[in-house]
Each structure stands twice: as structure tokens, then as C-alpha cells.
Image 1 (cartoon, helix red, strand yellow):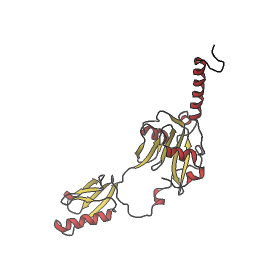
Image 2 (cartoon, rainbow, N blue to C red; image 1 turned 135 degrees about the vertical axis):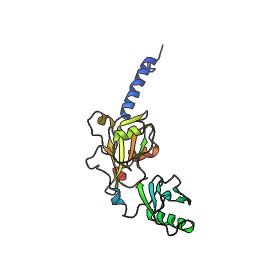
Image 3 (cartoon, helix red, strand yellow; image 1 turned 45 degrees about the horizontal axis):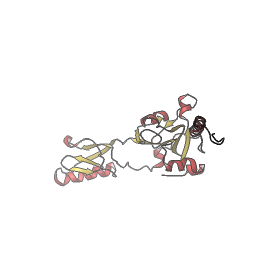
Image 4 (cartoon, rainbow, N blue to C red; image 1 turned 120 degrees about the horizontal axis):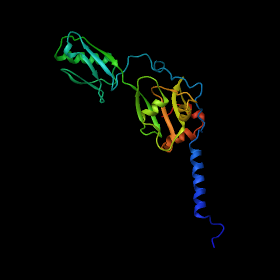
Length: 237
């Protein structure tokens, strides 16, 4: 005779299935203290407002134009390589990253004047700055940095990361952005956006997009779920 306290295997499996379904439903919901699609979550601060109006400093990936007056063979466009260098005819590799266009032009002119040209007139112009990026992290298929030339949308940004990963909570996607000098955060519901119930928000260069879910790192979990709201408005990272 089977004791009354022992649940039969079929009944136990049914009970376990119900509990698992309830647990999954609880995980795939909205939550946390970060507000959803707040009205004040506007475009980020213009870069010009954050950086003094100084000559631009060159960086790897920038495309520059070198003009050597009356010497076409030494003039042309170049991209600064990952090591921060360009290759100038007659001179060879020249470090460019971390210098302004004026500083680089003076250095190239000095090197050419030492051995090859008399008082060379060299001008360096920034033709195309390196594309700025948006960071996508959390429960996406391919977390990483993705280049954006201007604004894009949240759905497009998630698509660049090859979509959400298994275990993603698509009801909770957090965007971090600097607005009026403060690091701000806002939550968005991908399901509501796809259903047309919530607008697809604009995503800008330097934004950080984090998708909640099982692939979320312990650091992001602590930031999104454990800290009070006020902490999310302080500089971090």
C-alpha cells in the first residue's frame, strides 16, 4: 500500500510543470525601478556641449587628407590604422593618433624639410572621423560595440546584435544615456514596440543598450535590479 503522503509520479510531474510555467512567467515580465519610456528621456547631450571647442584629436579609424603644396605625389587621403599611424611617402610610418591635424601637419612638414623639400607647405584635414558606436550587452546573440553614423532605433540596434538570445526577457530592455550631464536610464518593452503599443525609441551614438535575461552578467544584474533608482543617474563604468 502506498502511503498517502507520497504523490504519484504523474501527479508530481503535473505539479512540477505548473510550478515551472509560473516561474518562467514571473521571469519574463517587466520589473525593477527603472521607468519605462519616460517622457524626459530625450536625445543625449550634444558632443559639442561636453567637449571644449579645441582642435579635434585624431584617432585610429579617422580618414585624413594630406596636402603638400605643389607636390601631388605626396598628397592624398589616408586612414589612420589601428596602431594610430599613417604612412607618408619618403618618410614612412608617422604616429598620428593623439595629435591635432595642425600638429601632424607640422611634424610631416618638418620630416620632409629635413631631407627632401625646402620649406614644404603641408596641410592636414580631417576628412571623415571614425564612426561612433553604440554598446549592446546582456541577453543578445552577439554583444558588442556597433558603429552608428547617426541615430537609429532600438529594434534596429537589437538586430545589429543578431537579435535577443535564449532566455532573454524581451519585456525589459534598458537604455543608458547622458542627458544634461547625468547618466540616465530608461526601460523599454520590445514586445510592446513590435505590437505597435509603444514607440520604437531612437538610439544614439554612445548609448548603452542592455537586454535583461538569463545571459545578463552579474554586474548588470546588480546595477539593474539591486541598486536604487538614484544610483542609475550617477556616472558609472
